Length: 313
Image (tube, rainbow, N blue to C red; front, side, top):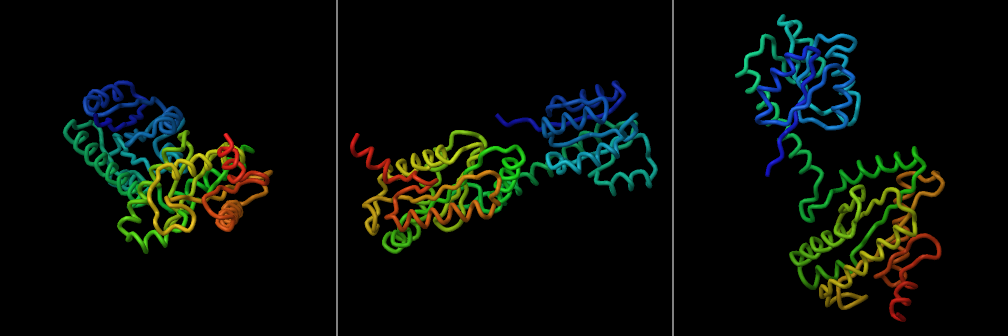
């Protein structure tokens, strides 16, 4: 079932709230706020698709509410339609110049309200679809480098600010050039799709992210995760891929497709986003030099030990 789009209606006159609610609730999920502060709180919590905003309100008028919405990263892209009794052209121009997408005057005409709301919700839906497509890798359907950069820097800042752990891993498909040379690029693309699904399926929390880094490399971001926990998760991914038993007749490592990974974790808040990724990349290089099909993380942790323990058990 298709989820209804959400509209936030903001007006200090209760009868106006109920009038607009009656017009729109059959087709949309309607939220109502009686003042500017309440509107900002609801917008941050519920992320509506459209805001219908009265201009003239006590304490915090519509222009101030719009300005606050635009200065908050969580709400800055929500389209706002001003609804007001001020019908002079200069009033409308002022509202549009301040960032509103449309301007509806009172007394409200039911047909006009519904038509303009439908138009702007359609535009917002299309905008979000385009934004989503711009953030998705076309082959693997994982987040792409653009989205990875946005999420990674946001998570790094949050971890630094709140003194929380953050781990990042870089994954590489072992001997992938040889696979493409031997089996063809179409089969290689299919392998990348299968591995992307396997890597994503191993992530257990909503905040974890797996993205395609480029070529046959993937990056995993693990907020609030210490180094050993991150290594254990990547080792689980490595075993998952190996157990998929995808034939690799040209591998220098195994008869099946395998992966190697380097894992790095924030240490005492002294790392930078780039230095943390660089450390993960160095550990990936170490994994490759160590024979591939392994995970290298913090000192004293490596998959060769685990592999030996598994073979004994």
